[in-house]
Length: 232
Ligand SMILES: Nc1ncnc2c1ncn2[C@@H]1O[C@H](COP(=O)(O)OP(=O)(O)OP(=O)(O)O)[C@@H](O)[C@H]1O
Ligand SMILES: [Mg+2]
Image 1 (cartoon, rainbow, N blue to C red):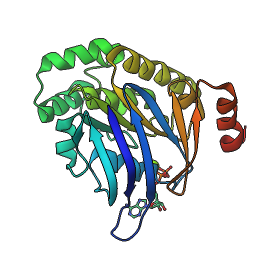
Image 2: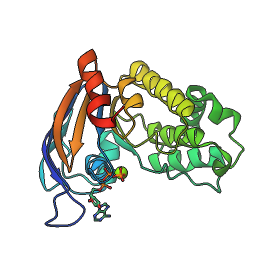
Image 3: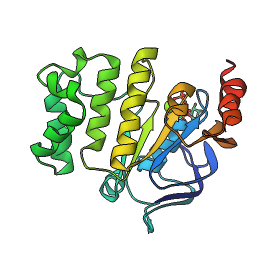
Image 4: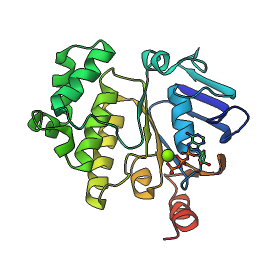
């Protein structure tokens, strides 16, 4: 169980980017939707240890992990899929996974499991990561983050730059990850489609504050997501 309480953070000392963010998650997915500059990346980086929080707490399975570094958070079971994917374009798909497995202290057997889970990565293992489509690169970035079997996976705008068809495929893949592994997922997004297809709850974020919480099992709240936020 991930318990985030009144979390506050920013990129620089004295400049708060988000504040008073609270949620708990035990399997399943929660989404944060907000426009450019709302503070999604800052929150993702703070949850996964790249930035230090300036208030509040992050507790995972009863352990306070608030102050751990990225490496400490990864060991504790939190993995980040960063904005922009950041795969090594000049390396092959397989080499990208080998690098990640090595960093995580996992064997190549684990890579085989991930290639089974994401068959396209197995089929294209000898291709350079740069030659993959955006959706395939996103799968590679996700596979890299999954290599150490995290309890929580934080994804920062996974739909960025993907076609509607690729977003649908990504949604289906992420849904499989959530339902089959029991891992918890925290998604930062601007894409309502991806969130409605995956999340139990979506939090609307404006200037770093949670202005509304929407229950995705409720039709009215689903409509509110599109009407109030996306102007559809
Ligand atoms: N490296 C940085 N140092 C200082 N301030 C930053 C930095 N990156 C972003 N900011 C500022 O912090 C605020 C939140 O930005 P952030 O990138 O976290 O939002 P975001 O919701 O992820 O936006 P986007 O949708 O564009 O990715 C913005 O006002 C932004 O200008
Ligand atoms: Mg961002």
